[in-house]
Amino acid sequence: MVTVGNEPTFTRRRISEPDPVPLAFAFDSNPAGPEHLVTVVSWTDVAQQTLRDLSQHLAGLERRQSLPVEGLRGRLEVHDPGNLRLDRRLGLWAARPWILWTSCDPATAARHVGDAVTGWATDDMIGSDASVRDTARRLRHLASDGGLVNAARRKARVFAWERTRSGTTICAATNREGYADLADFAARCLEGEELLPGCGPMRRVAGGRLDSNQAELMTEPLVVGANSFSVVVRLQVLSYPGRATPIVTLDLSRRLWTRRLKGASARELICYAQPDGSTAALRFSFQRQRSDTNGQLVHTYRPGDDFAPIARHYGLELPMTAEDIVTRGHALGGCRLLVPNVPGVGERSGAKRGVPDLDKMTAFRHAAELLAPVGLRAWRGLVNVPTGRQVVKDRNERWRDRDEAHEQAYQEWQETAKRDLSDCYAGAHHVVVGYHPSLYEDAKRVQDL
Image (cartoon, rainbow, N blue to C red; front, side):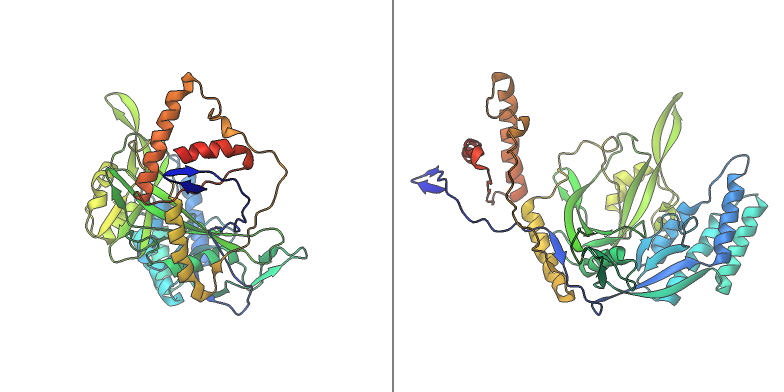
């Protein structure tokens, strides 16, 4: 495009476009590369069997009950500050009895888990059932005698990968948990760092699955007008056919927060606690329950059993209802409580869930600077590939032949697009229009806008 006087004029000419820049990081396979230290805490055979027997006993009662593992999850969240991944089932019904992965040393990690289980057995396993009381007593004895859990250090070489005969990467024998370890390794490098100017340091969220290939970080809550949200950064480890090593992708989105419960469409809500002086975000839940209001059954929320340990640890008032947490939690001193705004639960929000490309590139560049010293570099593995397929026609937007019935909708879309650009980029932006030659007229219309 060239400018004649004050009027822009399109000039059609072929130019050499650079290759696209994916928001991803690559590395060179190196068995002697960075070392990621992980402590794996697991039940002993005696402790695991004891809890399994209690679970079967509770399930066989006339009024069926479940093992109260939700409260134990909350205790483990606050007792172990180095928690990397906490198995949602706590290793009780899995093939391997792993409870959690942590960055603490084995002795400290075992003590943290023992303290959490002792408090759980004392406070949550109460009632008139003799089997429950006996199990609680046995767990406390196992914790005091050192027979409750095993804790072992695992040294993961996160850049040590092997390949199949076809050249596709696979986990090496010395790197069996490579996908999860690589995601955690990258997240720990970004934890506490500011990726977006003015948004504060990133808080790491402990994963809920030991076999997941991603890790998550989030910012402090940001308030824009009547809307509140945090920017979420997800690091995901992906492999591709024929590629010898995985890549680590970086994805940004917004997590909207609500300050009013409008409904209860979701059975469970995953909420977050952000303690002061910490670079972690702790998870707790809202559970849906039925209640009778004026003779009519309605669904409401109550804090899950995993919330009370967090509240006690950080000196928050108890009891707190779900309504208390939603309306006042964001302003609590010492530990903010944030409830996500999901459809059918929170009030209608004018904020978008996406992140502007300008912010994505800013965060990616900062992340690249932080990850470069450990051997992760921006991936340049994508190239433009010519295709013989037909171009998609205006995606049914009716821009080519607008009639009176669609003119008003078009005008509304035009005003919304202008307003969104101004809000997202604060009035300072460049719009780059890429178009197929067959869409030249549409490109001219975009330029006019």
